[in-house]
Image 1 (cartoon, rainbow, N blue to C red):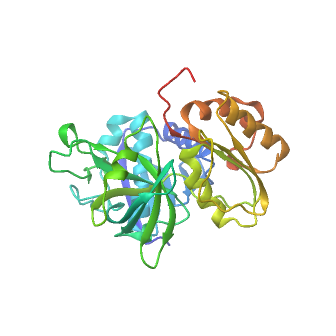
Image 2 (image 1 turned 180 degrees about the vertical axis):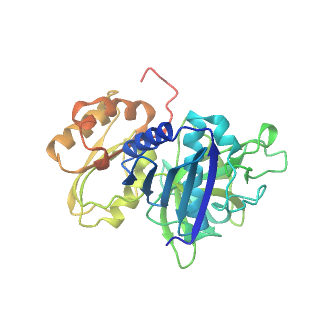
Image 3 (image 1 turned 90 degrees about the horizontal axis):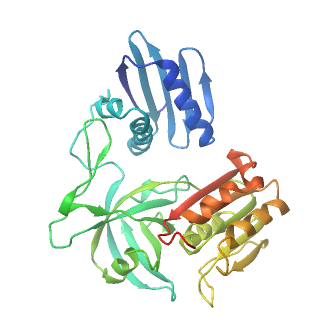
Length: 346
């Protein structure tokens, strides 16, 4: 039995409507359905389980996980989906585990900068000593840097609201929250390596160049997708995805398939170990469909492979519409927009 549990009762809400919503989200994210009955539906995720069950005058939302952080991750996901469909219900949730509001979320922590130096012309590498390295494992690769928008004011950090959702500072205390990947992590020392790409349309690279040894920064996470568990793999991405791709390949030395990397540099390079069974193709952005077309072609060559794709929003949108990618089983693919390309003409 999970050691952390919580539930919230919701009045005057249709079980059937909630059941339909949860089953739709489970299908979208390829999550196992453990129960689907006339009065209860239960879903499993990498962080634990959640369910809804019919009550006399409404329904009960129940969560279970092994740790408080995992419970927070599940609760935050439930609230986020509810807020999309039923914002008033999401705002009014009251949980049985007696949340301590106004405290930092369990997945918030400070990290100390141990080093800050260029990795190559395109990437800047930060070495961080984490306060909570135990939060980071292969279930989720990503986290957010929390960078004050205005350095002239005392920073404020996120807290928990009464419904369990994260409350973010606003106005002059707002935070820039770019998502990055832990490239490597030494669980013994708590030291993580993070590579920041020089996006012409982003601000994190300049910030990363400015931090110095001994500085304390704030982060929140982890979140997002984790390490895939198959050795048959087509994995594709642009520079923003290189750290995640490299991290995945480190864990899958026996992988077979193809790696396709889009690079805007005339001398593409990155700190990446390629499994002997994986072919590597470097692409240049000579045409707007370069990466998505190459990825689709690779999937034709490896129709049983797990398909992993991450790039800008435009490339991600294109590849989702390609017939053989769209027809690939949802549990066998991951397509993500790692950044937003502002120039909609390219």
